[in-house]
Length: 197
Image (spheres, rainbow, N blue to C red):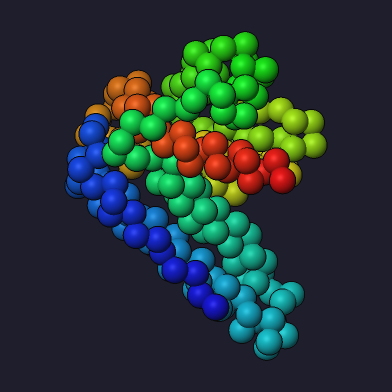
């Protein structure tokens, strides 16, 4: 069964993000979905044909991680954004875990924003490590490398230029501030609750 792209048009009109930027970003995401499906189909055919020792098979297998993670990371990114300001409640288990990890909610936010402000392209992800019961704000350079094994992504921010350059040029700091205001903390909290099960 093929993967289908999710419609995120509900985000159009979101404060701080032009519709042009969002629509272009949605098209990029849809390309990851299409390429994931193409790679899965091609790799299945190569397996069926017994063509698994070729360099082509190896390269396509490696490429699948890039396309698949590009698809999923964008779904998490758009899925943790909202046109409405949805702040995290003081009684939320996620907020309590943020306090336990960082001392204050502001320090958690500062750490997340500092990771996003670093030079380079990639992603900032707040991960939950269920084994150690800890939160981490991390920088990921590429879709397919550097992820924390076994950890659950709770909050995802895209810091590739396509996520902000249309509206903010090279002013990444302003984009990060607008992104923070667009976080749907209810969605992030639901991810945390699901991870705790």
